[in-house]
Length: 116
Image (tube, rainbow, N blue to C red):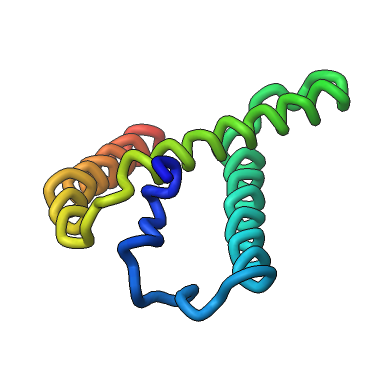
């Protein structure tokens, strides 16, 4: 039971998967896991394109390693922030993420102005 803390199935009464059990619940959970792997592969292909000048077999192995690293990172974050409430996330985003994004926007404008 300690590894089921992100779902907290024993505490949640409502939700999308309340009525499902057995093979149908397994199919839904398998679909969610496949979605995580596909999204990790997309992130690895788009945002981590290093090592593409190697032998094709090594490129494939490196891609699999990058995907596994991203899946492990997502699993770790999901477990660490299992009990994060929506108001905590909104508060964090407005205090830290929004000012950093505005700062990044200003830096991009300055760099584009310097390059021209």
